[in-house]
Image (cartoon, rainbow, N blue to C red; front, side, top):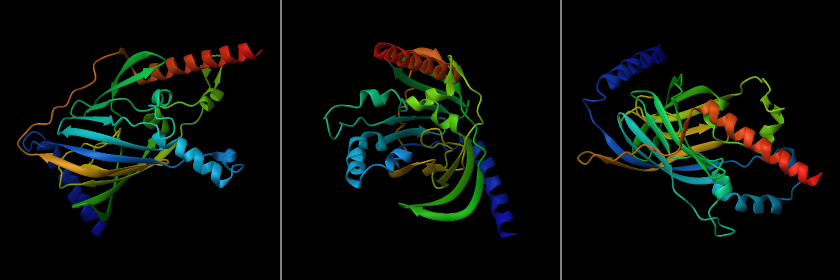
Length: 271
């Protein structure tokens, strides 16, 4: 009964939040730390603990990242802070091909813009935002000074990782065509705070009645470590606008075809 009452009150809050999006203007910047658990699979079972630690140090740039979310009620942009490689002292340019680029959301128009670069060419991905079907919970916890509520969802793997590729992906490609496989669903666990009444969130996550301060999906967790709310000065949000325009599906197809070409060229040289 208590759960039903909570969800009913929460539903009313969501409606009020939507109605007051323009009436209660809010903007700010939030810093998020991203941490990804290293999954070495069966290969890892053959590695010593020392080898695993060395591998983790070399991959630190990809496993631990810092992002800045600039937001208002309508728009947000999610940018990664560039880091220097702990081992070589260089930026991770090759890994950058398979990392999230500058990510812009317009939650009022449900539109996505994302800048990606691959093999010397810049792309501007324009598509619709994926609407997440959240299930609200009653559990709460504090993140900093904010009281947060829990919400969960199941999201297709492809919606969260369409920009991320690995050479193992090519095993599902035969003669340049994707094999039809069952879509993997990812459990998303989020914590949001109604104290910051905006439906924004980091990365692909949005649509809750309050800013998302923590979210875990697959083996990655994004945690907000600092928030600055601007009550007077408006935060400047610039959407990416450079690159060849393309949608998500066509971008994935383009990159995979290039990767197949690179693999075949490499195998041809060995032959």
